[in-house]
Length: 124
Image (tube, rainbow, N blue to C red; front, side, top):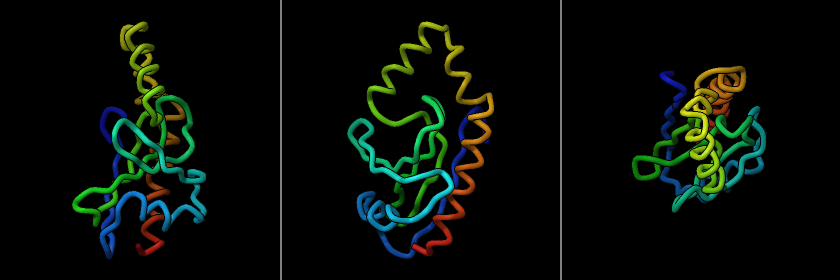
C-alpha cells in the first residue's frame, strides 16, 4: 500500500457487469459488512459500510468484466466527495491525511485483504 491506497485484483471465470456481480454476492456474508450497489458519479460501484468519510471498501469491475478490483477508497457518493473536498480545502489538506493515517485507515486495509479473500473463495 502506498499513501493510503490499497488494491487487490481477482480474476473471474466469466465476464460480469457490476450489477451482475452485485447480484451474485449481495446475500453473502463479508467481514466488511453488507455489500451495496452505489452510484458514484456516472458509474456504479459495490461498496461496504464506510468506516468514516475517508475509508471504505469498494469493489469494481475491470478488464471487460473478468477482473475484480477490491480497494480502499473514500466513501462513495457525490455528496461525500463534495464534502471531503470542502473539508480538505478548509484544513489546507490536513483532512485528507485521515485516509493514510489512523486506526480506520489500517482497519480498512485489512478489510480490503479479507474482502478479496472472501470473494476469491466464492469462485466467481
